Image 1 (cartoon, rainbow, N blue to C red):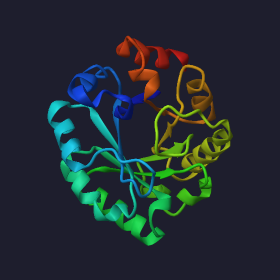
Image 2 (cartoon, helix red, strand yellow):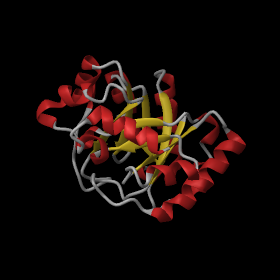
Image 3 (cartoon, rainbow, N blue to C red):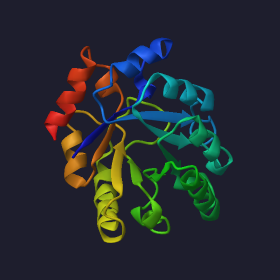
Image 4 (cartoon, rainbow, N blue to C red):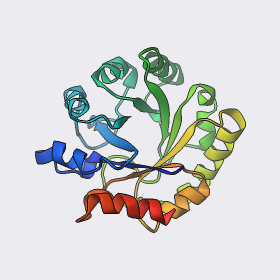
Length: 216
């Protein structure tokens, strides 16, 4: 089954509760956390995740685009995340492993993300313990970017690794997902689609979610 994960990066932060409720027909709620260091943008932190948790029962897919995520892994888990994604490029491999261990010890699902500069093979040291791998199809930091079709090969390669080592692991794609690109990502092997402007930029948000499902 293909899952849709609206990204609140494209929501109206002046009325975030309303915009979260408008996506209640989706499978996950994607929460982008940026620190202004790992990526050139700053978004939200633990208090906002905690507030989101208090106003929805949706599955919170928290994407940490931050340096040295081991420092905050437990705090985001305690704030209410259901799944936490850390970037492989954000720290040394041993410290990425530490962050994943902390997340798992908190009873939260574990994931790693790959920027476009990172090869699929980078997931191999962690793949057997992961619940999800996220392949970025834009350079992380800002919403509304164009889908990088060169990343379709990375999606295919990650899918092959998942099928070999951990078939239960999900494969998520984030960046430029819309009615045209969603089928490309799914054909390459994705089963979770993050969509920001394609959902929140629509006049009918539930209809946009359903339309994305319909394209795949």
